[in-house]
View 1 (cartoon, rainbow, N blue to C red):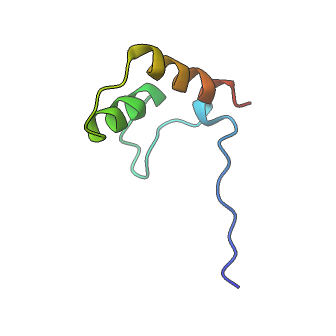
View 2: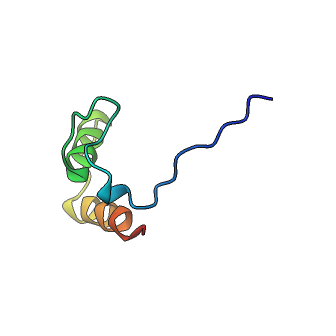
Length: 58
């Protein structure tokens, strides 16, 4: 009942553009958008680690 499969993050860095309406051309844009929306600034190193992680998902 009500089962559905959630999309995988595999090759997420290759599946451009992002968001439901294609608003963001690059994964880095999404990281910056969520960073701004959370109300606190994350360090550049943390943002790089997030991008590296998502890029490594092959």
